[in-house]
View 1 (spheres, rainbow, N blue to C red):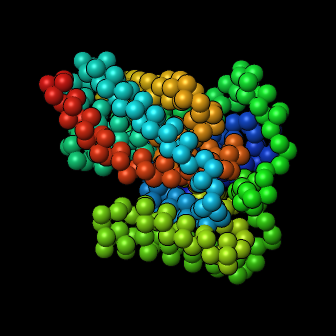
View 2: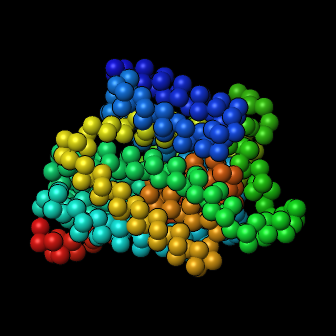
Length: 388
């Protein structure tokens, strides 16, 4: 098994390279997307013993690595894109959060006899993590004092289910749109070009996630390093000085402010480099999905996580369509719920939903902000309901 953190990073880099090349060369892998292919390759290598289930490399990517990636992607985003999809994305996100709460309560009731007296704690943790991403799982576990073995099994189940749901969100909109004649007619009837007033960034954002608009110069690379690391550092200091807002919100706010400065928006390669860091992060998430960890406690933890996400999925896609929301918006909002802002970015890039990227990031960060509150509330409700 490869244990040296630098060697693990080399393998993750090779995974991302292979995933991107496969996406470029094969229609099958293009339909899956480099993000999902990277997650699956990481899962295979960790579960066959090539990569470890835990590494300093993963901890770096889940912290500074993905944070700098988010900053660099946001530097290429025109904030005006939020006005075209923002309210609809927020509505989809709210429906998804309701689905998560319903799923966590359902899972707690169904699997309490198999998991024992701390089931109520997992109800809260799964509510938090499937409202705004995995960081909430850890925070709630520490706050609730979850047993270490149950916590470790829950992490493994969470990562595996999140990877599976990423696959579903990549595939489901395509499949459902093919079964929706009205949607196809609307697409054929749509105008060939956006109105002249639409922001220039919208149709090109997807391409900038894979290639720079112009050749990179040394000055571009120097600017990206300074902007990415500088924004990450500044967000951390502001989070310490003004803890009412979490660090991730400071990070996003600073990046979006910088992105509106024309000189900074002209720096080449920010979205492509940021996307690379996000793909590394997603590959590391796959590598953390060690299935054996679940069996130390029992498969009930996995079933609990699967139940929560399944109920969430049924509610967000069924109720969302009844509310008139399109499948793309629902998929990104769902991924923002289940995987957080980083997963929403990956899905938006993989499917070319350029106009939904910034709204998806926004609701992903909103989920991270409110997930702990929802998780705590559900945990206390289930504590009383189950008598834990």
